[in-house]
Image (tube, rainbow, N blue to C red):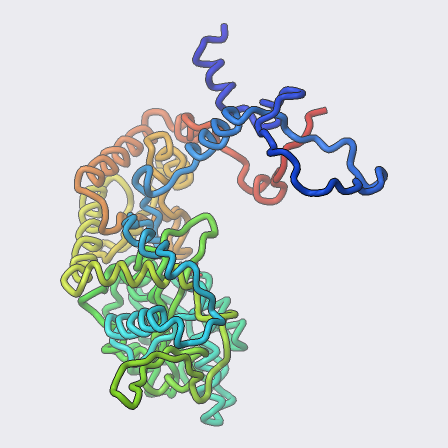
Length: 495
Ligand SMILES: *Cc1c(COP(=O)(O)O)cnc(C)c1O
């Protein structure tokens, strides 16, 4: 028997076309105040075009209900490792919506946009200060775009020195997939570097991989295992002694802010994701930004434009755009993703130096709290203090009860939590990469821990419950390969 609740569910999940009723209209057009024009010839008009005919209230409900099916950080806990789904203060959005910023154009003369240029200049300075570097380019549009800029600069650097034989870029086997991809796009050959039993860079393997053909090393710090590489000082030295450039993937700087500067460690180029560490909202393909920060010897190669400060004859500050001497060129049409840069500026200014250091305090303690509370329930491949994220393995559940990391992740959805990153880094079997971020309360972390323990127990008692999860969503387990390869992007009439 269908209950009222069933009928509610059916109603709620109806597609817009299925809510259509012939002749129903949701709009009232104002009287025509322009001359009537001829319609195009009838053979150019589509007679059979299906359009939904719905009332205004129906369409408002449809889109509101649809929006509630989205999961976001504003709904609940989102521990997606390496993606840093921290809460983004609404103040930053407000700052980015000030008309004085939204209504300017990148081609306006410099003297009419001095405030915007000053802000970009100060953000360049903040990011260089936070990372211990000499210069910044705000123009790359994403983390991967920053990597590409950095690797093109490495190539320009070696070319300027006449070192054309330097073709190899070393990349640890725990690296984010964008690292090898951008190295290849910049014309290099990738050589994979193993991790040692502790999850650090294997120094012997590194020593035997460097030579005259070394262009550089790309390394993520903390690594994607959520670990601070205890060999990092030695790693940088070996690469520098061999004439290579050290590139730092600082997509996730939450663990280091206010404590460790990549510049002090000797890194030559790095990027950071403003849409992770510096709270630009992201996910769903939204706008990102991946500025690069560089040491002195790389500065002449920075992308154009740079924002520079000058002083006029009366000693007043002015700001202008400049092209670095040996620039690799442009990474985008204008000066970067200005809205995202504004949010990062607001975020950094709100926190100040004390707040910035508290970010890393809280991010690291939160991840270690989860690690210590879930140890014993899930396998922990690298059992040592972690940084801002912790990588567990569900291989114990797989071995004992046939329950995979995917099953655990899908079951979390039933408890209102977004799944963590799964099956990454690739060197951990059945990986569950959990990043709580610094913005979560202890109560939220405790709830998550309780849920994860419950799921481990469910794996033992009723594994089929996990194989079929999620149960509490409009669609249960979907065939993800088919959904990605054969997506239905529009409504289709059922024949
Ligand atoms: C997210 C991420 C990237 C890539 O950043 P995009 O903005 O998605 O291009 C690179 N490295 C690491 C470690 C990341 O987490």
